[in-house]
Image 1 (tube, rainbow, N blue to C red):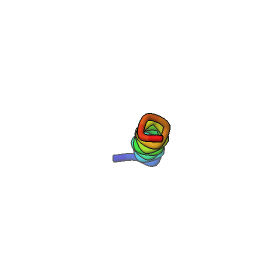
Image 2 (spheres, helix red, strand yellow):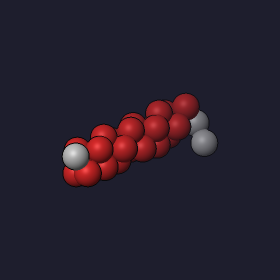
Image 3 (spheres, rainbow, N blue to C red):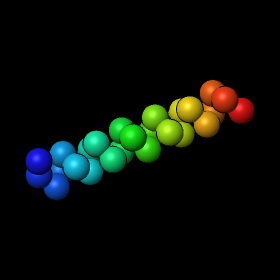
Image 4 (tube, helix red, strand yellow):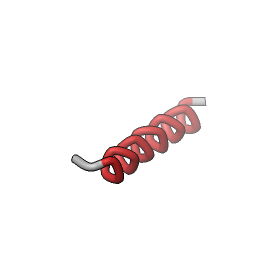
Length: 25
C-alpha cells in the first residue's frame, strides 16, 4: 500500500469517526 492509499484510508476513518460522533450526539 502506498502513502497515498494510506492517507485516503485514514481520511475515510476520520470521516467515519466524525460522522459517528455527529450522529450519536
